[in-house]
Length: 307
DNA sequence: CGTCCAGGTCTAC
DNA sequence: GGTAGACCTGGACGC
Image 1 (cartoon, rainbow, N blue to C red):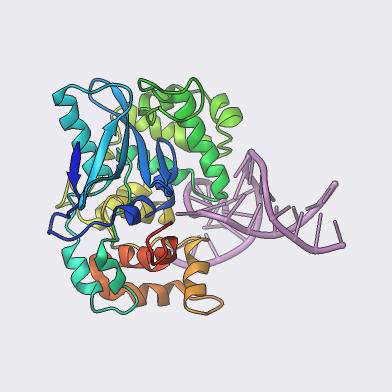
Image 2: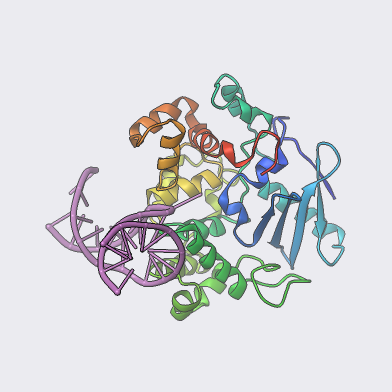
């Protein structure tokens, strides 16, 4: 099926920029192949699990194909909705583009950058973010890979082993996995207890993460969303800002051991105080975090458009 | 082989 | 409310 690459405000969408918009776009159950280019994702649907490939189609469109089986009509509708969510196509970035157009550092984004690949659920976003804390990216890949490989449901056509072809695990599946799994298989270290507690809270219905999405609760203020996220085990200021960015709530800047040196290097300095960084992007208001992220990741795709 | 530290957070002052 | 110290893990460093 075809999906038109057009934002909710009619703004352009650069599909390759979207594919390489964020490192989490390449954590299972998402796989980016920047060469082809394509995005493969295994989706949990209401009544099944399917692996879907998104690639450039005819001019202005993405083409979505479902692996193995041609899905029935109602499933196709569901898949299209989920892909639109993952690609963030229903977000209106035209106001942000209006601001960026007058900024020499960011005017380039108006060609279609700014849609950060999103996971299927806020729960998934939160788990992945906790898995990025206080460790190298290789450790994050190890942890998330193990969760999907060992706890995720297989889609038709999934390889016998590995994370490919499996959906992100449900909160229940993660809550039921024992301490030993998090220690010996996922190599999550002290995060294991956080992940289990987080999953148990969601599975038991005590924690509702999905309502924190900007689409789900546009009236919920960012301050309140941040307060709720900070109550979660393993979620501090960095993780809260990061999850919020993935929820389309860009008021916070993601400040961590990767972004701080990166912004300093781009400004040709040794270090830059957090307050100064915030000050520089403050004019973008509720898009400050997105402006900051795009400023940092401009070099992820070169001018010719290859990653 | 020991120390440091990666896309930090928690607890105890 | 603000700040040390501990914390799993493993790859990168210095010695």
